[in-house]
Image (cartoon, rainbow, N blue to C red; front, side):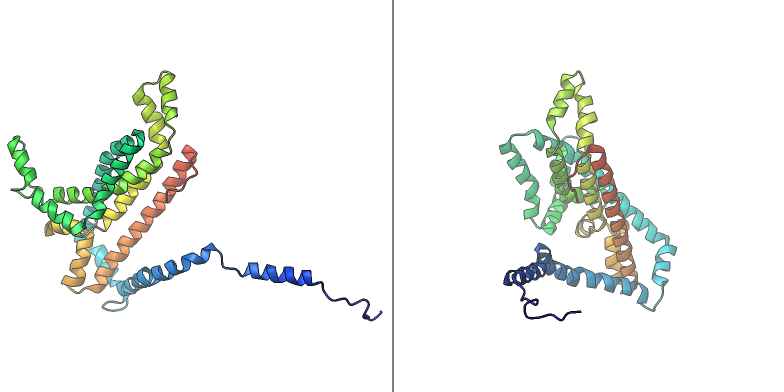
Amino acid sequence: MSLPTLDTVRPEPASGRTDRAADRKRRFRPGPAWLILPALALAAGIFAYPLAESMWTSVSDPVLGFQNYQWFASDSANWVILGRTLWIALLSAVICLALAYPYAYFMTISSQKMKTVLIVIVLIPFWTSLMIRSFAWIILLQDTGLVNEVLSWVGLGPFSMIRNTTGILIGMVQVLLPFMVLPLYSAMGNVDLRLVQAAASLGARPSVAFFKIFVPLAMPGVISGSLLVFIQALGFYITPALLGSPSQMLISQYIYVQVNGQLQWGRGSVLGVLLLVATLLLLGLLALLTKRSKRHTGDDGDLI
């Protein structure tokens, strides 16, 4: 075995060392993913810690155990409030869909100038405080308000429209309607209207072409908008508190009563945790329905 000599041992070319140094530099260079770290840190501080604290409080207040969950399961009033919350959230989603669908379709087929006007109309409510809008509805819907005055003038009223489910639905639909219009408009804008025209040119009635072609292709927007409205409606507090009544309490109001009225932090935490679980289940359902809808329509775009 021969030993290496000065002739056989040669220094590594400078270019090779430079390439490896450049590779290491590229390997440790921060990519675009690092840009989300500040947002993740903020979310962890604002959401993750309070969420973990609520989960811990639900099993530790007043003593360690699951007595708060047993209280929720054994008290029929809790199930009534939960059922009422789910029912009103469902009605809000259905009414928003019925109102938003023709509006979004009209936006789709309108000229660019008209689209701009219609989008501004949708966005106007975001420029006003939710509290101010709720008080405005109280003035409009009260027994001597403008709405009842007009209904009485035409011989259709008056009706009781506040401190009941009607007032809650009117206020919630007005707030949540833009969250239905925008996903619908986004989905409808991706539908090629020439397909509907082609079906009509081949002899299909306009209504058949619309329901057989356009509606299925716009279904991702229906699914996305409906669940967005439904999930937000589950946690509404200001509007039901101002336009509803204590006898028709929703789960968000019930949490406030348990925490601030009765100082039952454990029970309030249980209600919040269960509301979160319901929201996560609905988000999972949204992802599943969206995936199936995209497989059916052949759309590869993301809705959520």
